Image (cartoon, rainbow, N blue to C red; front, side, top):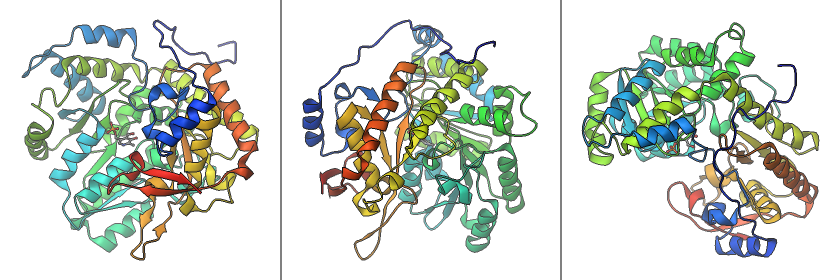
Length: 458
Ligand SMILES: Cc1ncc(COP(=O)(O)O)c(C=O)c1O
């Protein structure tokens, strides 16, 4: 192209109005919500960057698919279409639909993970960690050192530390490791990609020790685009070819179709082992539904099948990754500390660096996310010690390795002016960083406390 501006590769076909609550309304909403942004009503939010999960805009083709969904309980035509699309993309023979990613995790882990085992992952996503721990197993993060340093510049900060993986296997014994998992891209580590060379190295270690290898594939297409941009030998390969190669290195995957399935709901578990798949299907019937719908409507299966094909379009991925980078560049050039380089689906603000006066046990990233909402109606999410702090026996907490606010960008939803507004809000809030104070938790649940905890300002 002759021009530098990378435009949204779509025209807007139907629109959804945004509400503009004023500051007094936002303050009142915060109090009611116990300063937990998950507890806000979505209508109280101006720009919603809480998650990129299920919040994207579907294409006209996907909506057309919704109209031809086959709602048969068993043997739905839409299931076979979905199955074939997943098989062709991933190469995995057994395709099990689920209502979202964590259901695939829950079913796979219930079948494969036992008490006292250890599951290594580059970085477990929160639901993945919770599902491993729910089985009485340990969820161990073995990401490369650069992956936990927000300032370290590395093209593939999501890479697994292969040495640390070997060490874990030596320490624990391969019989106590049901599988190794790699999350692409590494959401909890900043949306950072994993290189093909790293996936190959993990495969090699798994082969040597007879351990299965699974991908948490939620953002496989964004990961493929980073490989195309950054890894030697892939510049001329299509994102689809790269994605196929990534999947070819694994024995199976869990997937949330709410991300790179470009759909509002759905997920799947895909794998090669027919015996494990058969046990998973038995559990699926108990918890999700019959194996040809797995908790989804036929129209959802149609939307996902089309989404999985659209998502590897190079024009889409070029725009997608550039729009995230655009926000990151704007705020970083204004001096706001972020995780660099920016990841695929989100910009991560480094609250620990911006708010050095707030110690981890007073949740600096929670304080920053509340302030972004109060000032500008922008909703992000804390990815720090609220989400990942670990209780110690003495009642204190081991802090998370990083204190981040994730601003996740829904797919095909916001335009450049929305993103310009978000940048303006962030930069404005950052100028008042010194005045900000921390929070304490006044109520929390036993699992995934960040969803329901209530806070009080200190
Ligand atoms: C890396 C990763 N794994 C798993 C999940 C869980 O998927 P779901 O929200 O569809 O249950 C998510 C969701 O955000 C994720 O980002």
